[in-house]
Image (cartoon, rainbow, N blue to C red; front, top):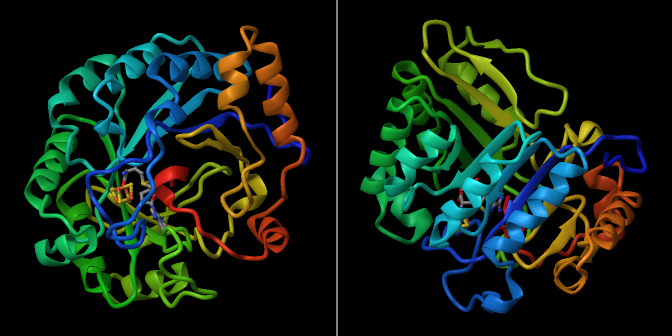
Length: 327
Ligand code: SAM
Ligand code: SF4
């Protein structure tokens, strides 16, 4: 079992399978000049399968596949098939921009992989295209509605971006009136490839909640697990629900149960900390899993208690992009 130095059990791993993406969301990466990792620096799909198996043998029961855009990897379904076969892995999920998922929806459903987070930061086409710097609105909307209609547990991730999409908060919320979907409003974080730096944000979770309250004063809180990063609510009479994720305010760090492994093998024990180590080469060179397990245990035995503590050591300079960390 993986237990950190604050006695928190680590049972949730976010695995980034690539740093590449077919969109260029302006809060995530610059428009151009991005140094993507060479393919030999990325895990192969077989390696990702073996790594997942090893993690599950250590008590990890929840794996989220992320990226970059996971579905730019043509062999991604091989990994999903492997994950679906792992005993003890109770929850498999994916975070996607929903541009390329269409051809795989049926097989995901057959494999029982029903948890899909779709990142969509605008319901207005023009706003969406400005943020993503690409014209993929129709396919994203179509795949989103298809996923919901075909019984997937869909959560929409919407980052509140000052001056860009806050007029879409209430229209996006309207989706939950007609569809059983959860819309989660996230605070923007300073991981955008270094293109923008900030110490505070205007649209924090309290401002988002107040904005919603002005329109829907009767919403009420839902029960959420202790380890949840979102605080969840429902508007009476609406089919779906909504949540806020204080990713910049970091109210949830104390119960953090997660570990991130980046596309290139960096082990990230806290979003606001420097990666503790890179396990790709150790993993490649070692035939036995023992050394890899030992390295992962070492990484989590020196974990900051909160993102604020980690940030102090890191001096607050973030050049990273979410596209390599995986969100
Ligand atoms: N490409 C996929 C997608 O967009 O869903 C998966 C990878 S993306 C990096 C994972 C999550 O990170 C997305 O929900 C995205 O909105 C979020 N993200 C990226 N940059 C962010 C930032 N600067 N602040 C907060 N969230 C961010
Ligand atoms: Fe790509 Fe996701 Fe980053 Fe947007 S948020 S640029 S879709 S990796």
